Length: 445
Image (cartoon, rainbow, N blue to C red; front, side, top):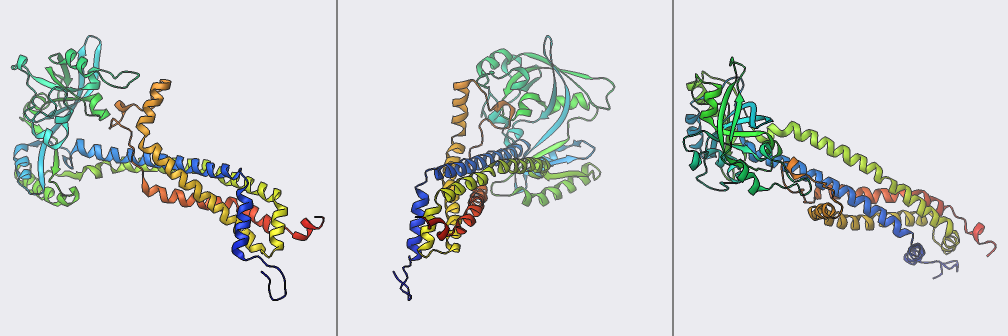
């Protein structure tokens, strides 16, 4: 193609494909794509796992605490059965349960004394509010689950967390349920407890009637469950059965925040009638966990920043590779420029090609990150079996599987950052290529 002066000029699209052909012949460019891919996959996996961890903590805490919690600031709740009846009459509330909290030392056997948290609860109401019914090993999902066992009908009975009386296997990180039940059901233990107002500790002797395995580390390793009447008699012998917390599960389709006003109104009326207007903190479990979740999110952001800085090495790698291409392809660039391709076009071409490398690497990185995330539990099991490394201790967390859902909200920023970083890495080599002078390069050709 010739211009009006009879000079031969390449059409811009032909120039583009000619330069693209030169660049693509450099197999070292694949290294840039691989580097971007690995960086994107790393950031996506980290963001997905940490976000999944935060969501799991939030959801599990809500399950074990209930949707809404009523907690008096400095007093216990007497006549709590009347409060529960009033709450359950509301259309926005499905169930409510009373809890009495205490602390003490549990004597399990000779030389085995554990510091535990004692919970006084009522069944079956507690199983309706929390997943306690599903967590019982002997009476799992039994609608008639209770504290009593046939062989010890006249004796106080209670539940203990599985970690209180046993330990998981060091390699598999799993409990032997059959062994735990055979060794502990019917076993006589003693809880020594009390309050700041008691002159001397109170001993509660009871038989273990079931083992609790909730997957919630704190509960499984530290909780003892007793009938609320038994714990009340030990802690507050002069008041009758009392509670210090009411756990509430809202009706299906109702958001906990929407039910707060109803719960507060019911509490105000109840408190004015029975407790002389005692103030209580009434919050959703999400609000209660928010300070902890805020710290987790800060840790996630810091981790992403650190890995982002490490992945910033991709910019230097792309710079080095593209600079090498420019230095070794100066004659080709000179030929292209002599055919009518301007300096601006050459600069734009290299920047665009760098961005293309970033886009390709990011696309492969999203695919790799997706595969790693959804198969993370299988990968963890394979590493555990192949190398004997237990990377994930489910007995330590609130859940028994690694969260494996991709956080798509983090994917877009990661991809855009990868494309931008690749374009920046190619910028200086692009300027260098644009400054190539065909006359100086081709004068002796």
